[in-house]
Amino acid sequence: MYIGQVAKDILKWPRPSSPPVVKLEKRVVAEYGMPSTHAMAATAISFTLLISTMDRYQYPFALGLTMAVVFSTLVCLSRLYTGMHTVLDVLGGVLITAVLIALTYPAWTLIDSLDSASPLFPVCAIVVPFFLCYNYPVSDYYSPTRADTTTVVAAGAGVTLGFWINHFFQLVSQPTPSFPVIRSIPALTTDMLVLGLTKFMVGIVLIVLVRQLVQNLSLQVLFSWFKVVTRNKEARRRLEIEVPYKFVTYTSVGLCATTFVPMLHRFLGLL
Image 1 (cartoon, helix red, strand yellow):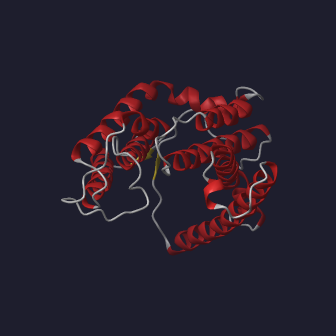
Image 2 (cartoon, helix red, strand yellow):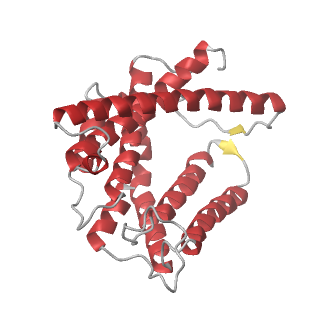
């Protein structure tokens, strides 16, 4: 996401002209178009999920590949339908993601083991993403690109920090096996569905509460620090306010999702 969003503000290729295109989304009209980060995200999520699970679970590879192709294709086509991207934007996003997957795949196991490598790892996991967000390329005019990038990167930093805390303080319920264990995907039963929905709703409620609390507190602190009038929309877009409050808020969301939500599930007997 960071690479895709930064590429937009460096290349500065405009979105499709309207007319002839009918734009069905208004929020991201101010952003540039190349590459499509929706195409990048859809391709990354579907194909990394396929690659990560094909040696761990028993299912027809052709079925998994078809689902990955269909999911990413539908997202890519939706960006054309809504008038947000050209075909070249979408193809560029898919190609960039394919290159990133190919380059990083040999290091996936190493990356997974980094969360237990050093007590200093969480510092790097927070400082480096924050530095990247704060030094995001300056645009000619305001667009939500920087804020969206900070949101995604911060959530990733929070998830990484949460996994490190789980390992360091041994909060995980079961140790992860060192080698892949091939297992069959369990059949979906009514009890499993109800349990899953219950865990989902409990987790969402806690995450929403944490998000709102941290966002309000961080904005109050930043407004007070920089002597800005509360609820000033333009002030929230300033670099020294927007990046810190977004980063703190969504780092807390990622941390909550990976650490505090499972703890609450365990407390309520849902695990």
